[in-house]
Length: 401
Image (cartoon, rainbow, N blue to C red; front, side):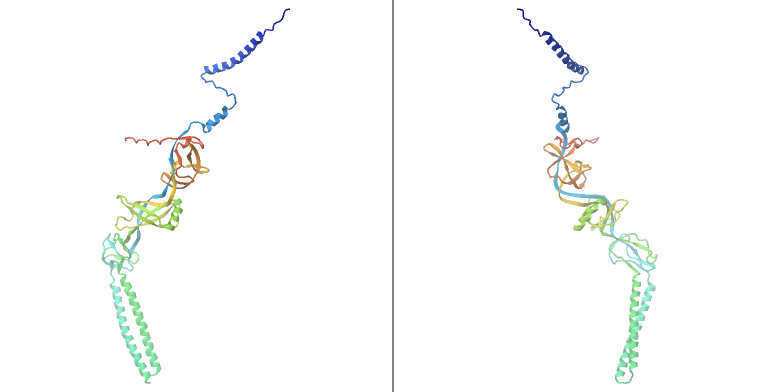
């Protein structure tokens, strides 16, 4: 009995041809990519490749190189520097209180004078003659008063002996009282004449340094019109400068407890003079946005001179213990100010409040002392990104060094 045997050869051959056709397509794609110079990309089998790329983009990549500094806690002073001008504490314009001719000049130009010192003498012959006349009139009236007093005493004695009437005593009394009033009027007139005569002597109203003298012996001066010179009080002196209006609140607050100090650098000499704020103007200059400030300075050595241009340094604000970072580390954003704090190798955004700024340092609130903040390289940093600290680059050498 013949048995039929089934042979799977054709079926297997067909399957192999089908697999070869499929494999040939992938291989062709790889070869075509290689032929075009493009690397072949392996397709993920589980669909997680997109998530891995997103993680790498969010910070899972290489650490960003940055330069950091450590926040320090220390006293912090805000010092304002401004150009100032030295002005006298008082400036008096010398003027005569009477018209006349200058008879004597008792001082020299530029001389230091004291209060009450005689400066000029004017011609007062007419006033002196008038004074002498009044004094003579006083002597005459005083003699008449003495006679009237004796007449009254005599009349009273006669009245007691019934030799005269009461009317005679009243008349003597009225005569005596009238002459007493006349003597008082004479004394008042003499005092007024003495004042007029005293106007002929022009004396210094205060101590200071005398300026140029524009009159000479023989010059005619008019009352309260002709200037005889000026006296500038140079010890003490004032320095006048301007302060920005945004510093005014801190300055006014410090004035309540103790006036802040001002250091003045003198040009041409390596000397500084220290004083205290004595005056703050009552209005802000709308054109410049500044307020005028004066400080009183001692000038016993005579180094300060009116009109001298100086450099003034004012301690506008003082913080006993402030956390200080470079101003370069502070970020400005619509949400406020912040810094990048490095914690466990990653950059974290830390909101801060800037309390004061001086030069390249800022006193901030909201950051702990000892924390590291990013200074250079922050433009490449994102919140939560890994960072690596590098040494700062040395400053570039200038040409010719």
